[in-house]
Image (cartoon, rainbow, N blue to C red; front, side, top):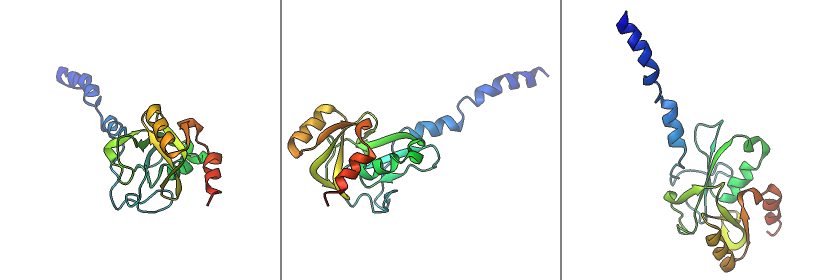
Length: 167
């Protein structure tokens, strides 16, 4: 009887490191975007095109949807039914990686990133929403290529919609 009791006492400890915790840990990082991955928004091959990409972790989806551009990512995440599901946002730090071929080890937290919108640099589907880990890097980029320096919360559907009128 004593043996069973001691097993029952220790049982909760065995489950303290349940797989759920492990999954949460894995999901706190962006996943690599592979050459055959397609944009969750428009279906285009993601790695074929220049400019910063985005990735989201959504509460209702098993896999992290990836996007061919931060613009498409914002267009998706700003839809009210999606906004509620977004747990994490990742974007490329364009101060650390090349515009032509952004590398996934340079994904940063999209909610704390600084953005430049309205720049002359193009990404997929028109004007880029360039993402940076620091305000300084964003300002330097804006000085060189034009555009407004914005925080995550400054980017709205209306703002992105305005950019579409220039085509």
